[in-house]
Length: 133
Image (cartoon, rainbow, N blue to C red; front, side, top):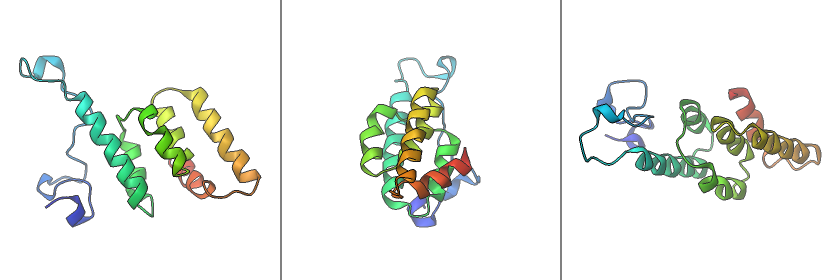
């Protein structure tokens, strides 16, 4: 049974309250010789998961949980998507996870300017995200 059947983002056979999907690639010493590095695949999986959660998770609870556990997606790959969906709060969290604090300040500044001008499209999500930061 998978996530869409149980409203959880991990298989039911996992038996744990945490996702089974590893967040980091195996150290080179434990990988099978000649096996490809799983890092790029995990990056693609995280990118697809982030996009699906943005489009389907109306309460943001699952999105916040996934963001809190760490994402391996490339920010440049999802930046246009997040801007299109007015999710500058998520973009700022991804920039922060990658150590790009200058970009974090730029995104939060844009959110604050938007909120001050009365455009509340991203302000509610920003408030929820700020609580998680």
